Image (cartoon, rainbow, N blue to C red):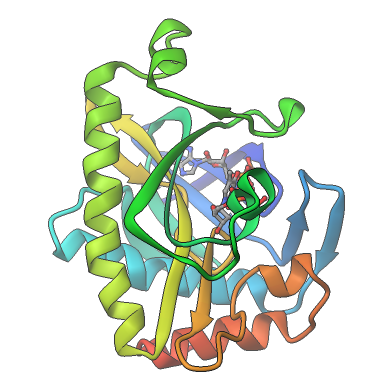
Length: 236
Ligand code: ATP
Ligand code: TYD
């Protein structure tokens, strides 16, 4: 497969066309950002760690029957994926209260959420990724009711698989964000699953092992990502 021109440079990844119009190359950069891009830093090894982390998780999800865009790793910091028509709606599931939920509702951080919650956000940096709902998504044509139902079902299926995977490694999957897209009309999981887009706490000490270490200036960001990876069997 031949790498062609850059299609898009996001905040953390660059997307390249290939000689196959149905395939893209995702290049995971060391760039890290938070607060809608207001806080930015380059963290050594991040691109490699997130690329390998994502590949491991996508393969687990695929094996559990969840359709994903992931095809193969081609470099430490690059992988081949299916070229999806991305749906601009982010799906968030929360098992434990943290982050935006605590800020918005004033509930106690760390409170278990039973049943887990499901929220939708519009992928729109210019408007701070506002929270939306099914009605808005349908009216504005961001996703059909059928696509939303599939996205919700797949997002909860991911929860079943990953909650247990992380628990087996002594960690709590607090919350996470997924992005989906269409390939030949089928809804598939796209983008990435890494500690950049989820919250993971040590199950005993509740130490933060995810991007909150960057957001809150706690240090040891990539060391924590690598520790999460090691605990679930990833070798970097
Ligand atoms: P955010 O951080 O809010 O997700 P971003 O655009 O800055 O936004 P990056 O991860 O840096 O995020 O960029 C990767 C881009 O590639 C995203 O816009 C994502 O939606 C898109 N993308 C991911 N997987 C695919 C795919 N399989 N096909 C097409 N586009 C994809
Ligand atoms: P949330 O608590 O709503 O936002 P914040 O990160 O601002 O506190 O996020 C819930 C989870 O989803 C968290 O693990 C981060 C992830 N997420 C993203 O990675 N990107 C997004 O655009 C959104 C809305 C959430």
